[in-house]
Length: 218
Ligand code: DX5
Ligand code: ZN
Image 1 (cartoon, helix red, strand yellow):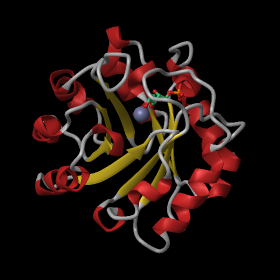
Image 2 (spheres, protein in one colour; image 1 turned 90 degrees about the horizontal axis):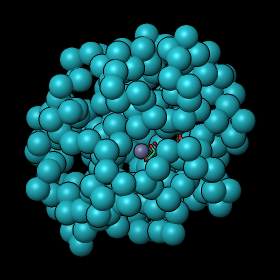
Image 3 (tube, protein in one colour; image 1 turned 30 degrees about the vertical axis):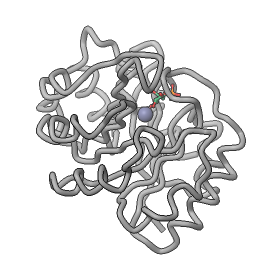
């Protein structure tokens, strides 16, 4: 079975202290740093780009798990690779040539992930399952932190786990993850848990360690 990893999303960090907020979740036991990139086009919100990411990259040695909610995505793959991404995840819905995009990510020497929105079936990934290192099931509609987990996502996680089979592919879930639902999400087969508001709410670094542990222990 795949190792459990907790990936706090810096989307809910205090952006005025972004470097510190990243160092704090590193010290608090985060396994990955989840970086949500939004373009105001693919999703109805704008976050930050490769320049901001590069500037905070040196604050931790933990892997940067970069979730690109942008379209088109191909022109920016190299920039995020150079900015320090370790895993680059793109949306299956973001363009007509997903296979080409995944090849471009691997050509940069990075791990390639694919995300699917709540309305997209797991079957959309059947023809790229041999070309990815991470499969991300969105359990909210992307664009904002702090939304509620969509219950139908559990069935999709089970379908994704079946599609992955024995392949060494991380199964990540993003949106509305809390210590209350993490157990069910893990039972469905997920091993990477993105958590934004449930870790960063209140932006008090003293709370991050216990909150990360609560999700891991669930
Ligand atoms: C949603 C982002 C998520 C989000 C998670 O568009 O991809 O990573 O920040 O936030 P929570 O955990 O608050 O749902
Ligand atoms: Zn995300």
